[in-house]
Amino acid sequence: MKENDLLFLEQFTNSSTYPLLNQDSQNYKTLIKNLQSDLNKKGCAVLKGFIKPKWHAQIENEGELVAPLAYYKQETVNAYNVPLNSDLPEDHPAKITMQRENAFVAKDLIPETDIIHRLYNNELFSRFLANCFNYEKLYQLADPLAGLCVNVLNPGCSHPWHYDINEFTVSLLTKKPEAGGNFRYSPGIRTPGNENLSEVKNILLNGDNPHNQVTDLSLEVGDLQLFKGRYSLHQVSPVKGEEQRHTAIFAYTLEPGVIGGVERTKQLFGRALEAHEIAEREKVRADELLD
Ligand SMILES: O=C(O)CCC(=O)C(=O)O
Ligand SMILES: [Fe+2]
Image (cartoon, rainbow, N blue to C red; front, side, top):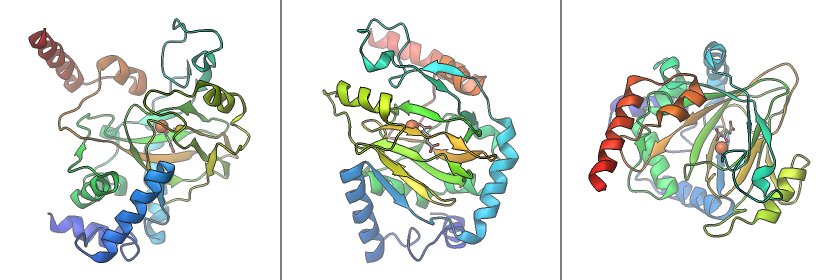
């Protein structure tokens, strides 16, 4: 473990409430137990005030400096991220379309000295996350663009209802809009083998109005959110007022070396790097070996 990892957590995070720097302590074990219990019950756990208040202005400011570099591409999408012309019945919820209006700032545009980037590179932080999600070890997503992103939502825009491809996500609110921009989710609405299409459809048609199936979270700057998005349909409600909403999104995998495909990367970031091309070529080669 690096000495700097300890010092970073001490300086920037609320280490008395969240003792990530003392992972053998009883307090740490109790914290993990409580977070795991929230994740099991609700698919979501929030560490309020994870970043110390005195650094809130700095994380907001660092986000504002990179936000103009976000890649915008409005797209018509559905909750399942399947092609809009998929061969599905007309009354299937995948036929309900929405606008994708959020934009991502890629990792290679976020300075390594920024608080969110230092947090992402902190080994004690990734060990803590592995404990929360009950994995032996987590690796940073090796993708040079998608590993760490800032999700930018402009006034009037929302992040449409969807499921995540990954089993879990970790995010930190770095800029709160004047109003709106709430994180809304329907805990465990689908399970492996049961898409629960009628409830999903109900939320897609009515879920913008708070609703007993939908939990509405109003996060504050510096709150850390752990979320199991594979089974919980979720959105960010429209941002109101003049200010943007920003979240840092930290991505991890169970295996090292995972890099996104060229097409998907171009869709999200407007470009792909040599690393994506190489990974794709090697994947093809690996698949050929398996044939
Ligand atoms: O920005 C957020 O709070 C959530 C974003 C999200 O759901 C995603 O990127 O998959
Ligand atoms: Fe998501």
